[in-house]
Image 1: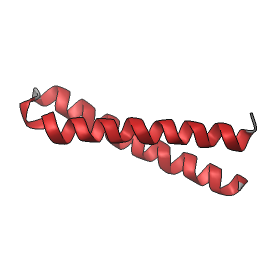
Image 2: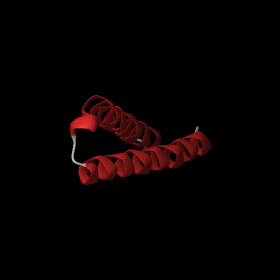
Image 3: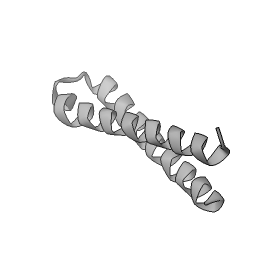
Image 4: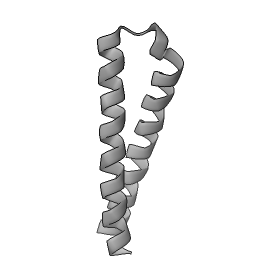
Length: 62
């Protein structure tokens, strides 16, 4: 598998994970203990930052 394809696959998987965490936070957030909620929100932000970096890398390769 080429580096471009591998990065696209990783980015796609990370996008799906990000959407799933966002949906969980939005639908179940009010019922979560505050510490769990804040950890998931932090994970959501971290994934967003990671995705921006991956997209920059993919953009440089393309």
